[in-house]
Amino acid sequence: MFIGKLSKKVGISIKAIRYYEEIGLIKPAQREGKYRVYDESYIPVLEMIKLAKKLGFTLDELKDIAQSKTQQGLVPITQLRQALDKKRTNVVE
Image 1 (cartoon, helix red, strand yellow):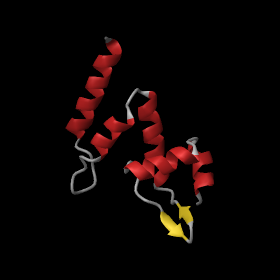
Image 2: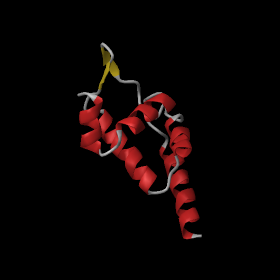
Image 3: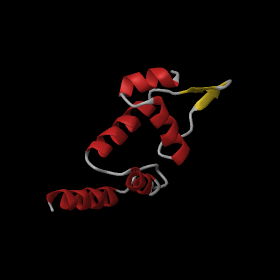
């Protein structure tokens, strides 16, 4: 699907999707000529980013978490818990 359709499906602007790709939060899209083409695998990732931002995570915090993927492509659960605990503590204070 093209970026406009993806944008409508997840409720994130085209500009934001391009920016997330530029900073490495999402993998680069395949290209058909000059157009970005996205598959369904982008939807849950973008929904997670949207939710994390609502919970108060910054893009820098999300980049740190995303960069700590294991060889299997998974973020270590302990790091996720630490990030959530830190965010929870900041919200309660």
